[in-house]
Image 1: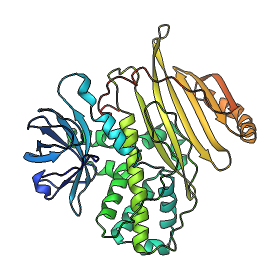
Image 2 (image 1 turned 90 degrees about the vertical axis):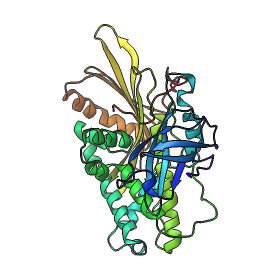
Image 3 (image 1 turned 90 degrees about the horizontal axis):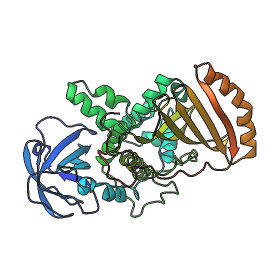
Image 4 (image 1 turned 180 degrees about the vertical axis):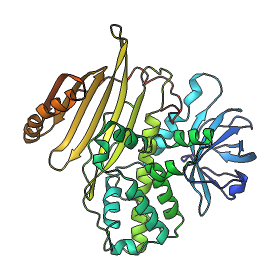
Length: 406
């Protein structure tokens, strides 16, 4: 029996053969269908999964025939699956009954990725004494994750930024599904995708026996990313104090940081779910960019305006970015593009930072115009950007959690 506590979405199986005869990988997505009677949250229900009939307890109400998407969270020491999607048959108000429970589940678990980034930087230093205490497999997974984080220079071109966004973890399941449909080798995706690398690291840490702390340290004040919330600027975490930790506390610290980062990625995927109104897509993601030996986090929300300009038959795209740079402090940027017209606005909480940015705006205008863009507006102000009204689709039923055509 797959026993899922009613407040979790993780599925635990004793035998991977009960799901599939093929080797499974962390990040892989499996399809399941409810074949038993309808069940409320916490009640046993029968699923058809990997050609086998299994029994599960789900945290949501399901009907006979409902389709589920399960993600492989861990393979060793036991197979663990996470509920990623529920898509009941037919269009009805219950179509997305998993979303509120999933959001409620993941929101308390999520936390800023900044502490993990600080730990990665310290543990990947040559000869790190803290890293030497860790199992070889964990060290290798830490190094692979660190190497997968792009440098900020790679995001300074259009194609480079596109690749950074693609590898941010938001589209992992959609890309793996696309590779499976075309029978392409998924190893290239898994090698560079940050969520795939996080899952690999989590798998190694989970499979390493170590006592867990009785309590959890404070999660901090970074709010969860919700569909209609504004991006949040996150400062670099203080240098990780890992040198004096012994093996078990070090593993527990890493485990908490990795699990919180994974939960935050899932929150971004949930909040980026398509609405039935495809005229107003929205994506929320977090881009980790290496800056020397440090890592900066860029929180991004990308929208397409539902209103269409009948004159040129174009809709505008808007990108809201929030970041925290040591030399400038918290910074919010809004870029609006319609055709070849662009407007850019900066907000900062410091008069000194505003003056610094103002000095750079003429060069930014030149750079934009050199790309054949017509600059309509470019400004920098002190304070916070104006709040935005909820998107038209915010209160309506939403579609797949993982965007299938991104």
